[in-house]
Length: 177
Image (cartoon, rainbow, N blue to C red):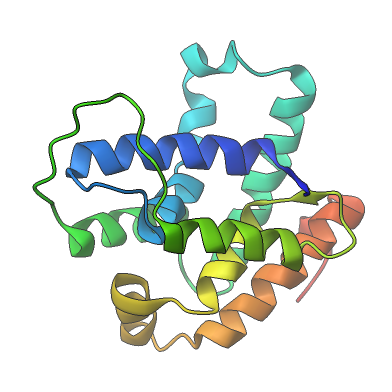
């Protein structure tokens, strides 16, 4: 089993909060992408930084830069994608009685797939998880991509390319794709 990046772990926590607020029973891929797209917002909130080491913060900043650079290739920003998913996903009716919100079985499969996509790397990052979701985007995500004339397989390829670049040398800005 591969280690999950700080970005993936934080995205997962954000996704749990999103799921509870939206009143859905389980964390789904849409909330995971919202979590990934919320990382910069999370990092800017000083109260959360207290729980992260300096190394975690450095890695998280690098991962955020990679996500932003990746999304910009499709004329997207984390904020615009996050808001669009929330709007289209809407509200559920499930009332949580516990503080723990679990991932759906489907969502768990995306995490396992992300580990496989990480290939030779010891760490599965947000872009690996994003790429795993893009293999079968369905529903809200598929609709958003279709409306923007974005092919999921092309977006997945770019996500994996940016993940490799980020892990190899953390120099997204100097690499032209």
